[in-house]
Length: 120
View 1 (tube, rainbow, N blue to C red):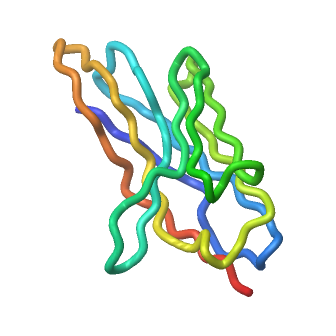
View 2 (cartoon, rainbow, N blue to C red):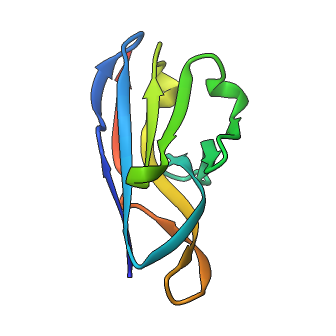
């Protein structure tokens, strides 16, 4: 089994900062990509950012220049530093990982979700 354990969500005023963390554990052989998606009620889950184990990053246009994704390969952990937060950043943030398990299969996994609320 594979688990993605998230931490760091919360309530912050506009202009503030939060840092999300996500640690992968379990029967993992290798991790290809880890990242974050967010979702609001009635809307599709959307990509926020992801990072490959080689360090390549992708960001949604709406967060470029404000959010920074980073990873610690040794800890199988990904971080999302969110600065200058805006009310439209509010949502449930889901950690995501595409990896190969110790049993040889490759699949995508999701964390439990962390609520981020930005007040105006």
